[in-house]
Image 1 (cartoon, rainbow, N blue to C red):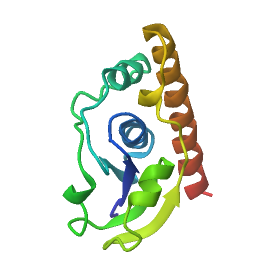
Image 2 (tube, rainbow, N blue to C red):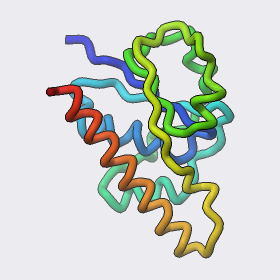
Image 3 (cartoon, one colour):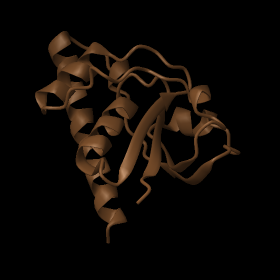
Length: 142
């Protein structure tokens, strides 16, 4: 059976889309191939790695990728934008996309506060991403 490919897209591919990629791979890797990218890729935020490790998911093998790395190169069953900016900046005509979805999730990297407050924000966003991915996977099986 061929797995459906899912591309999670955000602005920088440093937090939300990386989390979504890892959660999908962890929870439904038997049914989906998970990918992520950014419209303006930056390095994965250190707190992304930290909060994912806290829930037992090692993303050390993941790296930041750009949308252009995939555009027209790989067919995706789903393109899921995880922020408004990525949704607006992603070309409306994207070769090789089956279905496009949008999840508007706050960017924890833009949060301003102390280190402890930033860590708390990253944990909150991680938990939102986890629940959103789980709910989506469950909706695909019903």
